Length: 339
Length: 275
Image 1 (cartoon, rainbow over the protein chains, first blue to last red):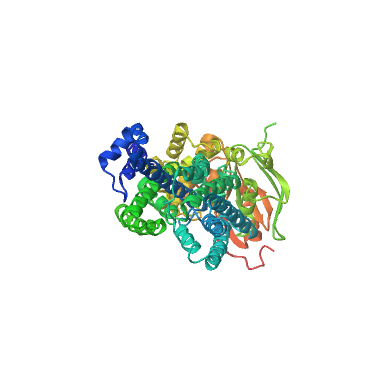
Image 2 (image 1 turned 90 degrees about the vertical axis):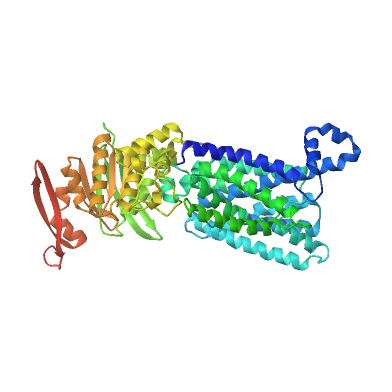
C-alpha cells in the first residue's frame, strides 16, 4: 500500500495532467495559428464567433482540436481501464481490452459499414453491434469446454477474434480497391481524424456506462485475481462479477473502437506501466489507468497529427511510442510491482 | 440445545461417474478441532470443497449454524466459513495488507470497497499472528511459512467462526510447521472458533490434544470415514495398518506437566500381522 503523500501526488497528477494536455493540444497543429490568437479565442469567445472572417480559426480550435483531444483522452482511458480490469479478472498479464473479440468484431462491423453504406452513423452502429456480438460468441464458445472459466473465455476470445479477422480480410479482398479499400485499411489502423462533437457523444455514452461499472466493482477485481477458489471462499459471487466485468469492458471498448478504429497496445501496456508506478491494488490502479491511458493517447495523437504533413495512423504510433516508453519505465523501476 | 457449528449429513459426490464421496456424515462443535487424515486421493479435498460450496454434492446436506449451506449467498457463507488452502495460486504481487484486506470482502457490498475500519481489522489480524511488520511486503515474495501465516491472518480478518484448513503445513520446514500449528491452536483457544483441518501429519492431532483443545480425528478411506473419534482411540496401530498399510508405534513422554503423544512409522505392513 502506498504512503499518503505519494497517493495525493498521484491523484493530483491524474487530474491536472489531462487538463494541461487538453489545453496544450489546442495550440498544436499543422494550421498556423498564433498563440496569442488561440488565447484570445479561448478568453473572448463571443468576439470570434460573431466575426465571419475569423470563424475558421474559431472552428479549428473548438470544433476540431478540442473534440479530438477530448476523444483521444476518453478512448485512451477507456481502452486502458478495460485492459487493466480484464488482466486482473483473467489473472493474465497478456490480456488486453480486445481479448474477448471486441476489437476484431467491431473492426468487421466497421468494414461492413464502409463497404455497404459509407455513412458514418451506420459504421458506428454496425461496429458497436458486431463488437458486442463477438464477445457474446466468445462467451458461448468458452462455455462449450468444461475447464477453468478464465482459460476457456480467453480461448473463446482467440477463436472468435481469428474468425472475424478472416472475415475482415475477405471484405478487404472484395472491396473496391480505389475507394473503399484505403478507407478500410486506414480505419483498421486507428485514427481520430474524423473526430467531432457528434463522435464524442456517440462514444461517450457507452464508455461512461462501461467505465462507471468497472470503477464500481474494482475491489472485486482484486479478489477475482486470486483465482476462482479463493475469490469464492472470500465471499465473491464469481460468476456474477465476471459477467458484470465482461459486459462493462465490452460496452466501453466497443464504444471506443467504433469511433477510433482499432488502436492496439494501449489496453495491454498502460496497465503494466501503471502497476510499476502505483502497485497492483485495482482500487488505485484502475482510476490511474484511466488518466494515464487518456494522456498517453492524447500525446500520441498530438504526434500523429503534427510531425509529418499527412497523419500517421494511431495504431502504428502507439506501438512505436509505447514500446520504448515501456522499456524506459521497466528499466527505472526494475519491474517493481509488475507481474 | 446447543447447535453444532457445522453438521454434514450423508454427503455424496461423483465426478464423471466415479464415486468420490460416499455418504460422509459428521458434526463439529464450537471451539472444536476436527482433523481429517487419509491417503492421497481419498476425497479429503473434494469433501472440503463440498462444505465450502465449491462442489455441489449429489446427495446430502451441509448445515452451518443450523442453516442449509445451499441457501446462503457466497458473502453469507464467507462470513461463516473461512478457508486456508495449501498453497496460493500465482497472482499479481499484492502487498501483505492488501491480501489480508481481501478477507473483508464478504462485508462490503458488490459496488464498494473495504474502508478504514476494515484496514484496522486487517492490521489487528496481522498482529495476532505476529506478522504486522510484514504489512507492506510483497505477498508473492514471502516464504511458504510466512505466506501461510498471512492467509491465517486473512481468515481471522474474515471473522468467520469456522476455518477450514487444507494441508496448511505441507510445504513448510520444521520450524514453520510448528509456528503455523501453534497459531492455529492459539486462535482456537483465544477466539473459540472451530476448525476443520485436512492434514498428512498424524501428530498434529496429538499436538492439539496435548494443548488441551477438544480434538477429534477422522480417518478417511475411499470417500468414507473409516474411523472417527478422539486421537488416542483412532490413531492406533490397527487403524494405521488398515488404512495406510503402515506399521506404527505409539510413544508417550512428558515435558513438565505436558504429556506428549506421538506416532512413529516403523515399516510397511507385509500382510501377516494385521489382516
